[in-house]
Structures are given as C-alpha cells and as structure tokens.
Amino acid sequence: MRTFDYARAETTGQAVSSADNSAFLAGGTNLLDLVKIDIMRPDTVVDINRLPLKTIERMPDGRLKIGALVSNTTLAHDPIVRSDYAVLSEALLSGASTQLRNKATTAGNLMQRVRCPYFRDGVSACNKRDPGSGCSAIGGFNRSVHAVLGTSDKCIASHPSDMCVAMAAIGAGIVVSGPEGERTIDFLDFHLLPGDSPEQEHALKPNELITHVILDAPIRGNRSHYLKLRDRASYQFALASSGVIVATSGGVVQDARIALGGVGTKPWRASRAEQSLRGKAPTQANFEEAARIAFEDAKAYKHNAFKIPLGQQAIVRSLTTVIA
Amino acid sequence: MADDRKTEASAEDENATVRTSRRNFLKFSASGAAAAAVASWIPGQIASAREAEPVTDDALPGQGERRIKLIVNGQEHTLNVPVNAVLLDVLRDRLNLTGTKKGCDLGQCGACTLLVNDVAINSCLSLAVQHEGEKITTLEGLARDGELHPVQQAFLEEDAYQCGYCTPGQIMSAVALLNDPNLPKDDASVREAMSGNICRCAAYKNILAAVQSARSRMGGLA
Ligand SMILES: Cc1cc2nc3c(=O)[nH]c(=O)nc-3n(C[C@H](O)[C@H](O)[C@H](O)COP(=O)(O)OP(=O)(O)OC[C@H]3O[C@@H](n4cnc5c(N)ncnc54)[C@H](O)[C@@H]3O)c2cc1C
Ligand code: FES
Ligand code: FES
Image 1 (cartoon, chains in turn orange, yellow):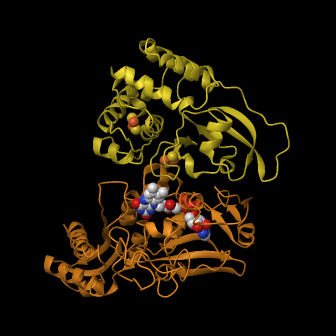
Image 2 (image 1 turned 45 degrees about the horizontal axis):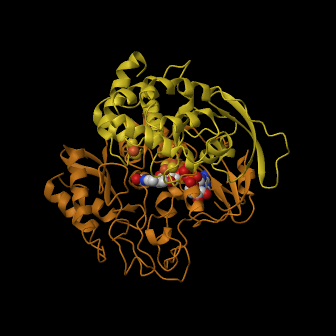
Image 3 (image 1 turned 90 degrees about the horizontal axis):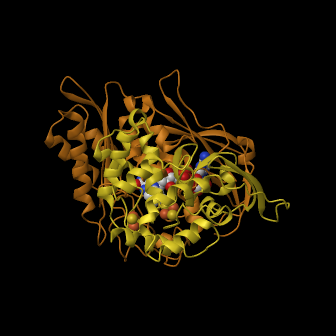
C-alpha cells in the first residue's frame, strides 16, 4: 500500500483542520480497500475513530440522532431502529458481511464509492477516477453494478449502499462540521447525480466532516420493509432493492415512501410513484402502477435492461409484504 | 486419508518461514508418519503461542513509523510500525502470529477475521495504529491451558475443513456469533452471519454442523 501521513483527531476541530488531500479514516472498509488498489491516494489519513460520535439518541421532537461513528451492526440492532425504522435495520443487515458491518460506520457507508469494475481496475477509461477519460461501462460490460435511473453519458455506475436506500425513504438530515462551522444537508441533496461531473459524488466541501445523521420522526402507524435482490442469497451488492414505508388508515394509503437501490446512480427516491399511491387502496393493481411510474424515465444499457422489470417487481413485492 | 491430506496442506501453507517450533513440528509431521499425532499435539502448541514473549522495539520509531502498544491475546507488545502497516501484516510478520490468514487482502474473503474488543472484523482492512490499546484476539488466543476452545474442538470433530486455509477466520467468526445475543440460533441465521467467510473447498455443510455443535457444547453461553 502506498505511504501516507497519519494523524489521529481527538476533536472535531482537529479533524476539520486537516491538511489538503487528506481522507478521514472511519471503519476503513472502503478507504483502505481503495488505497490498497491505488484508486484513492490521500497524502494524509486522519483517523477519526476516537471522536465522541458513537451514540444514538432520540431527540425531544421524535427524530433520531445517529453519531457518524455508530457501526452498521450497532445501528441495525438498536432497539429504536428495530421498532420504528425496520426498513433501516433490514437494509443494514442485508449489506456486506458480519465482520464488515462491525467495522463499517454510518458516515463511511454514506460516503462509500461505486463498485464499477472499470472504476476499480485503475486502467480503464473512467470519468469518476480520471475526469474526461470516458466511461468504459457504457459500451462495456454493464450488467450488475450499473444503473438504469439517473445515468448520464459520462457515468452509469449504480450507488452501492443499502443503508442509504432506507435513509432516503425515511428522510434525514446530514449534519456536517467544517472549517466554516456546522450545517445540515438534506439527505436527498447529499449524493449527486453524475451529470457532466461524475467525479463530484457528494455535497461535502473539502475537510467537512459528517458528525451525525438525523432521521425524520417515524411516520405514525407505519410498516416498512427492505427487499434486496441479488445474484446470490447473501454477501452481494444489490441488482435491485426496494425500501418502502407505508401507513394506511380507513383502507387507503395515507403516506407511502419508496426508495430504490442497485438501479440508480444515487440512493433513489421514487417520489412520483409514492404520490400515485396516496389516497388509494393498497391493491396489487395500484402497486403495479406505482412500480411502472417509478421506472418511467429508466434507460437500459446493453446488459442491464432486466433491472427495469426486476426493480418494478421489487417495489410490488415489498409493498405487498408490508400490507399483508 | 483425509487426515493425511490436511496435514500436508497445512504444512505447505506454513512453508514460507520455519522459525518457531510449531512450524518445525508441522513440517516434520508432513512426512506422514506423525499424522495421527497431530490432533493431540496441536492444542499444546497453540497454548504456547498464546503465552508468546512480548515483543518490544527499543529504538525510537523511524521516519513514517509510530510507536504503539498492541495487546494481542492478553500480551502487550511495544512496536514501531509504519503508519500504513496493516494489522494483519503486523500480526503475521512482526509478532509471528500466523494463525490469521491473508486471502484476498481486500475485505472480501474473511480469512483474516479476528476479534477486536470481542467483535469480529477483517484485519486486512485495518491499520495497526488504529487499534492501539484495544483488545485483540486471534486464533492463537482461543485455547486455554492446553484445551482447545469448544469451537476449535467442534471444527476438529465435525471435519469442518479440507485445506484449512479459511478455518482460522471461520472459527473466529463462529466464536463471535456464538457470543452475540442479537443473532438467532437457526441454521439459516448462522449461514447468513457466516457468509463473510468464504471457503474455497466448500466445507460449508460441516462448518455449519461445527458451529451448531459448539453451540450446544458452550451450553448457557451461546
Ligand atoms: C466485500 C465488500 C462487500 C460489501 N457489500 C456491501 C453491500 O452489500 N451493501 C452495502 O451497502 N455496502 C457494502 N459494502 C461497503 C461497506 O458498507 C462500506 O465499505 C462501509 O459502509 C464504509 O464504511 P467505513 O466506516 O468502513 O468507511 P471508511 O472506509 O472509513 O471511509 C469511507 C469514505 O468515507 C469517508 N468518511 C468516513 N467517515 C467520514 C466522516 N465522518 N465524514 C466525512 N467523510 C467520512 C472516508 O474518508 C472515505 O472516503 C461492502 C464492502 C466490501 C469490502
Ligand atoms: S484477507 Fe481480509 S477479507 Fe480476505
Ligand atoms: S477449508 Fe479450504 S478454503 Fe475452507
């Protein structure tokens, strides 16, 4: 592995005043992976593991404040998350492996980079890794980790996170601290579409540190579910996944949230599909219509056209599961 | 037959260095005649590895290095390590604790699994400096007073390996899962919880049997 300087941050202030071209080290499961294969090349690695960002608290207004360093395992098994945000617990537990989830942190998961083999191989044209060089996936092999929603002619890599799909459905704010102070970024504005600049993946400014994720208060009477479809039963990134939250009363849908993974270039919130369900009866036909709407703007590539029907079926099945 | 194969394979794996007596013993046993003795010999050898001498670097750390205290299997070591040194490599190369294996080196196979503060992690994706002062447990730290850990004993009895390369990681994951109150006990949940440990020999059926038999052995604990 290439060499770098190592600094250990004891306070948030120290972390955000790091040198140029530094990278925060949380669990290390994505950073060290990418440094080993020479895709990320920080001059300084700033170890943030000693910062006091490891707690989960319910706020007086019902929201849930999650420290950036809470592990994916701890978050998945948290009693409040299990009862009020089942979709998040299920999404976390469907991701990676036990030992990786034990290391992986909330902020690291938000910031994880794409699994596109052309990004990772270090030699193919890739606009994310080497802006302006082209996208090898568009005319290349684009079956499993490439998107059908939110793609551009510069990049089609899908966003790999399961956790983020659940958070997109729940709604959240990402609290960040930087040289200029603290601010909160809406979850749906945090990850950026590739557009013309796929190398810009998120809304953080240089040296900004994620300190917390604050989940919206749970929707009253909600039921939720995360369904992940993949090439094998476990320990695999999603081909398509669907995180849904539904509240019904009097036989009609009061509120519905649908977010998708594996099919979008960012954690994908299907707002129009949600709209189509509000005030309607939770029937198979209405679910199918919502699924159709969710993929209205989808664009398939040579090997991943199957993700459109697969993603639609994921929506229908996850909605059917929560209503049953 | 099966025993011979295992002995040969583990000897081959150990061929790289021959410094410790355990290695020499395994090399010797590869001649075949000693195969039957392996089962009864290994526990003692493992226990002595746990009581390894502390390693202390007296010199000041060099450029790009940092002095750290690493607590492994209850033993405290004081080491100068390059800041980019990976925990797995420091254990194997500096402390001669070669029970923890390197497979993919990228977090994908689980061969390098060990416990930090009793939680299973991939040691190939950790810097050694990150774990200063934390309680690290490797395969070598499981046996007690010459007695195998119940999970090790169960792997032996259920024949839960062929080449044995993934086995240390499998055992460490199994130890962690059997002590985790959050995990359900059914076979499907065990398979899911162990899915981060890939076995190239596909000994999965016997690994599952070993985990469940260790669970009953550990009684109230699991
Ligand atoms: C084999 C394998 C399989 C996987 N499978 C899945 C899967 O199925 N589903 C899934 O969702 N994920 C999967 N993952 C990805 C895994 O979830 C991520 O690697 C993990 O969540 C990253 O968290 P971390 O704490 O280890 O991050 P790190 O590696 O420490 O950091 C990742 C990035 O985030 C930055 N960062 C960390 N903390 C902060 C902070 N507080 N503020 C600002 N920036 C920060 C780092 O600088 C770095 O750029 C898999 C990973 C591997 C290796
Ligand atoms: S060597 Fe660490 S997971 Fe493969
Ligand atoms: S026993 Fe050979 S890899 Fe598992």
